[in-house]
Length: 538
Ligand code: NAP
Image (tube, rainbow, N blue to C red; front, side, top):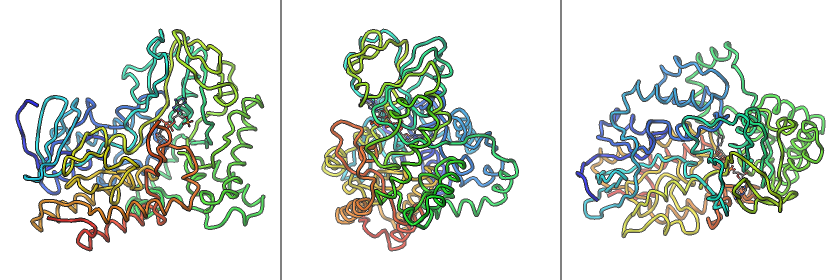
């Protein structure tokens, strides 16, 4: 490696929600010398990269933002319940400018490796620009869904049209006008993109491998009176979401669905369906994710909705999820998704009834022995979630051990923040933390605050390194797995289980705290209060 060696107190990787807040906190609260590396050309992370048509937030905007700038909470006006990608990016640009963050962020620079030096107790970080810098603390704010999953489809290189992955869409946009378009995948991304692309294109063909349970988002303008009331109550809102189950003001119905009458539950389901958003998933009856029979009652409601919405019964039948329980895959929120299949220019090709994709051809896609011709193929095939972005950093801990080696059978972390053998490495919303099972900014802020306090405490106590003990880590991994074992979540072939990536070990990637993000926050704080129990400080 060439280039000058600069020394920092902390290197932060990524300038999305996580990295921006981490920089602000370490630099402006603790006065540390911080360098942030960001592969994109500006801030934003997820909201910089994911520019596909229809990309928008699935959490309500009033809680999908930074809460550490209380003044900005009052000043910023979101245009809709779920803002679109350009608006969120504008918001993050505004925050970067307001807090002068960019002066410590090096853009267009990817971290390609880092190793911990056991003699100096420093990390040496390498970038794709040939730089080597050292830092006491290394903080990964690389996101959970940032490593693209592009399956190796046979024949892709022969395709004469254009193809894109949703997470790497061209910044100039894609003109679908008069084009024959394929979308591969029916996850949360595709469910947002399909209705938009169907409106713009001449013909849209959707390649579905697994049908999903979609629930209406019900986007739109938020009643100005409600906006005002929330602003007046922001301190309490922030407190509630921090103490909540999923980082949102949503709470399960404390009752089994099986104890209700058909009329009662139909009323509740209708209420949740009409409210839109994540109510149906996380504010449903409390046994929905633990009891197969309870789950089936909810699943049946959604199937009936699909049957009612989609005019062609054979298309409706193929759009109905079978073989996995409701809520065990990430809930897609939709705006006219099922209605889109009533359009004359939209065709569904379902792997189980029409045949799976066999190969990409010069002119399109061959599936089930049939050739379909396209000008554009959009792959909405997701991500190597949670562990992927961390492994891609090529980190080497004590003894040169890599995360690939440490995580050969799935992630091993302590609290999802720390990895044994990787001193002074902190992972914001890392595997085995609530992260993707919560409203992300809430979990990001919790980790950033915890890491900041930890570094502050270390410095006050004159400690140089902190690392999870193998024992605390083993206990945490066992706890994460025990907690999820009593639910239906482990039964699905979801990205939560690592099942979307060929060869990835099957393991539950996030952490479902029985007491929600509030309970997890309490655990982390108690561990800190006990002098960082489960960590070795030196
Ligand atoms: P995903 O949920 O992993 O969905 C990928 C889709 O591609 C699935 O339908 C999958 O089928 C299909 N697929 C993958 N490999 C395939 C192959 N080789 N052949 C055919 N089909 C294949 O990915 P995503 O939709 O990008 O969503 C990922 C996550 O991003 C979401 O779950 C969510 O957490 C996040 N997200 C958030 C927002 C938001 O809040 N604004 C919006 C979009 C996404 P199978 O189901 O059979 O694997």
